[in-house]
Length: 172
Image (cartoon, rainbow, N blue to C red; front, side, top):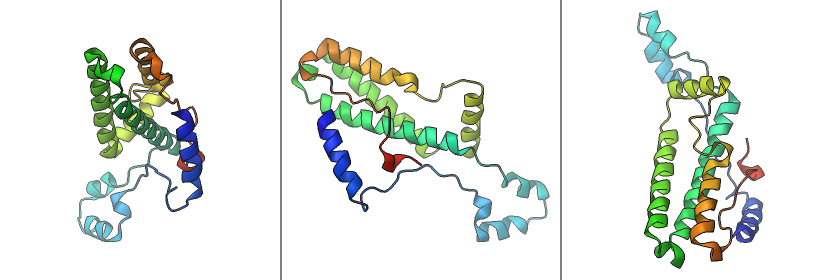
């Protein structure tokens, strides 16, 4: 599977139309001219201050974006593993894969709808050395899936490609 992915990623990177960067960005509503006019028309200055939050650091946005891509790649690999005979023959492995897929999908949905306050809280957690937000911190998910895979489907070989480096067209 790693060989197929490598071949695909090299071809994908050559097609500039397809190789659009996936990036988490931060924007302030107050930067939109019509919104700014409306807020500035309100006499209460405390309301204006609420729309002048500082953005989270680029490093935090990059970390979250990379984690999102890892979740997406893991979900794709889980979907492939669910079609294997050895997976179909193991109710516990199948249940584990479906639960992991659901967990990652929920986490991705949360990232899709993340608020500025949540971003700043994640940034503060990281500054304190806490990585609770990241499910795959230190490749925990990769290792867990590899353990299950080795136990239940060793004949498939190592299917789970660990991405220590996200391809260049995904790095910002």
